[in-house]
Image (cartoon, rainbow, N blue to C red; front, side, top):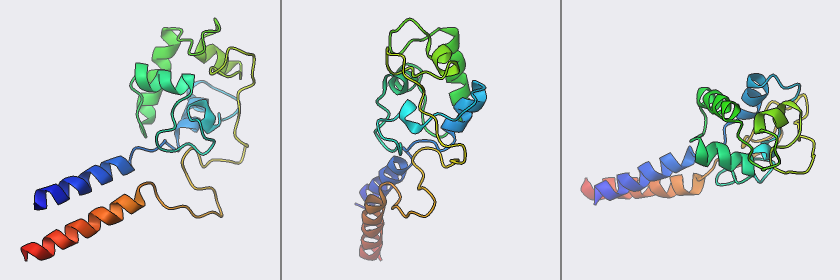
Length: 158
């Protein structure tokens, strides 16, 4: 019985780490020598990033085809190298994703749309609370519930 409580706690803790990486937009700008930092909507369907929102064509390409996961800027650098070498074109417009990013156009649409860039003073990245706002951490409710299960189980065994 106690094992199941620890399993729930472990799953909740693992799930809570599955959020966007705050450093990825800045790492993309640095790796590709871009004059601006892309907004989270390069990969995410929401401007704030977040769990289960990497669903743009470019985001799906780097996640599903190249195995990009959260919070590993070195893995991101490797994936950017891979898509550059392969001349990957997520939006099938004839221009590679890296070429589009370097031209400051979106690799998510075949139309000639400017790349959305974050404000120059915005260093918060994706899935990070903006200054002056408060936001509960992802899955905080699940973590609290798991903690209650652990406490109840520990008391029953004592």
